[in-house]
Length: 279
Length: 307
Image 1: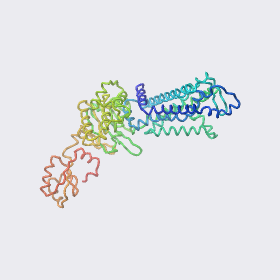
Image 2: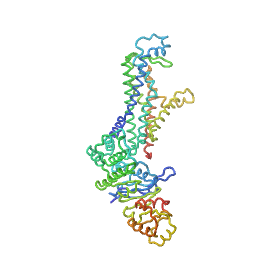
Image 3: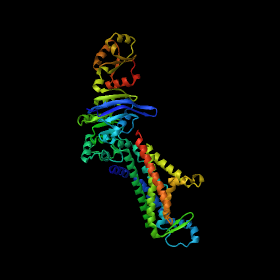
Image 4: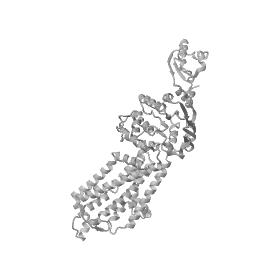
């Protein structure tokens, strides 16, 4: 198992395109940070115009914590795409490249291969999130400095003290890792069905976009299914920036996504075990 | 001695298309076994079933007497295979590819062995190059190295000469002959190049539309007296009468005004040529089909042979 995992990781990190994802994250984060450096104060003045009328806010409001929050919100769609790029390619890419048949003529079980593909995709996801934390959070703290964090919501205004923020980010990144792992397991499932990489990547994003729209539609028709859509829960990380933190809701969101991950992974193993390899 | 491979009533359908139909055959230890059939005859499907890539609808495969599905992992460690073209990771070097697949073979394979198989397939000195820079012939050689690295007793090679130039084909033939002769491998090989199979196979099976047509030792099945000799001539009106009254009449296999096909030993061609010339028939060309090709066509393509 360990040998197979080492091989899968070796293949992922020997491939130049793997690093494109890290480059994309760096580029997006830098663009947002530069934009906030040049126009951040006027942007903040605009979004806080209502708050400023009622409160007298002093100190470094445009700080690294706030910029990181803005970055995380902006990357809501991008990160799943970057995760799908690797997980969606995991089995389908091997099939398209013709290496799947060579792999499966070796004495390894198909279930183990799927599990190791999933584990390597998970490790890639973790590294992607860690990289996001480094360039997003620590980069922003370096550029903008620390400070108390203002969390502006549509119906509320939460002020978090500086010493009370870092652990919330750590939990948010942990939660984001779980959410992205769910995306990875979906992409892996679709990858098992396909013999080319583009199909599962596009399908994963299509499903995420469609279900996200359903999650956000304020129609009574969808109210009953919304709690069971994983996209409804992907933004659960925001809960860590509420006061008090809604642990019950966050826990439920984590459970839903964990269950989705298990179901997607089990379905992948079940299907892949029975699949005729004709590619 | 138990056969190294035995298939019993193997069948596989894809939708309404029956790719393999109740196929049974056995392969003995040390054989180089030619697996022949037209495109779509079921060769690749059968080979894939032997490797667990495709699941049979019914029937069984035994490797060294053990049912494949009962001991898939153990049996795969005894087999090396190339299925169609050997695709590898182009962004890795030949050595890295070999190392990866060697590590998956369930055996502790040392660097010395990797270098040894690279030597056998003639890739020493090029192993550090990226595979995407390899020619098709080099990829095929690396494929053979991957198939060989864990010292399997059995090699399953599906069209190993695909995409190779004539020199590459000759080199591959010599490599396969060496693997059988010098390394004692049992080899099941399919190819479209019947002449190549004729050169290297000791036994063969021909399948047609998923069913076995014939199976046996090559030297038993291929009687030189059954070779087909095509003679192109200038059409002559009385040719039929001349042939009918000659000793060659019994050898006629097919007849057209400008081409006569004889079933005969190619050694008799000079004799036939002399007779045709003596009868005033202009001989434009005489062509002897390789005996396996003739045999294969006679079994699998009725339209070619006109009785």
